[in-house]
Image (tube, rainbow, N blue to C red; front, top):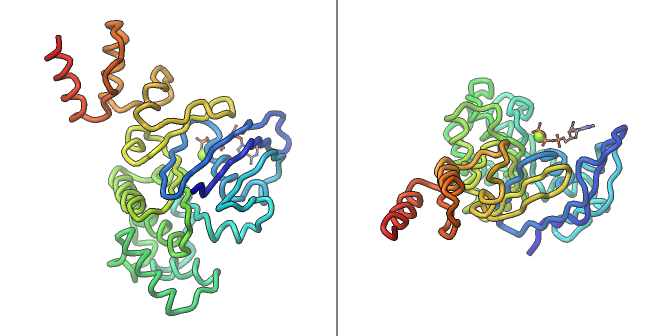
Length: 279
Ligand SMILES: Nc1ncnc2c1ncn2[C@@H]1O[C@H](COP(=O)(O)OP(=O)(O)OP(=O)(O)O)[C@@H](O)[C@H]1O
Ligand SMILES: [Mg+2]
């Protein structure tokens, strides 16, 4: 089932001459993890959570369907109940004194009954591994912990779809790993994930599909292995080291790329071993 369907979407910001999204078509299935790379990433995320066109001035053509409903005909609140959004800066997403109150705050706005709130609070903190910090002061948390609380606050609202726009941008390497660990757990739980991140090799470990936007249009939409074959040569997209080395070797030697593209060291060893054995 398609949980999000973007149909012939074109969007131009007010006072700008050119659209930053042009004729975008995209469907996202339930439980899928979709990674967005390239240009106009935030704009596309905003269109998928209804911020565009409801809150941002501009000119939109086409439609975005969430769970079969046209976002143009939904309120921002209705869309927010289905689509949770996590932004890059955890500092701007914490409004309260401690971890618990931050997560509860979001639910109070939705009018969830207290008994249910407690259960949701525990589940949400558990999945981001923050339950032991339930009463900890927000300003005592590391960046990674703050971002995990921000994710928990969104999860407590039980969205079907989670959009994360560069959630690790402000974090150190440890914080980044913590977020990817949470994303892996979320993916297993079956939630649909749309993620923008600047680390394609890391994204490839979790994404089912990766899209590249260039010149306002979708240039590639592929499973990670095919995606890296296609974007090879685009200096702005970093490939996994082994994939890069493999493609460099094959281009250099002018050989045909008949074997599968390796994406990690184990695959690289297996594929190079086979090539040497056949030689
Ligand atoms: N509110 C706005 N008004 C006018 N133009 C905007 C607005 N927001 C973004 N833009 C422009 O739209 C284009 C796409 O921006 P967007 O933020 O979607 O890209 P992005 O891929 O998320 O970039 P980044 O990697 O910097 O986060 C850019 O040229 C940007 O300058
Ligand atoms: Mg952005």
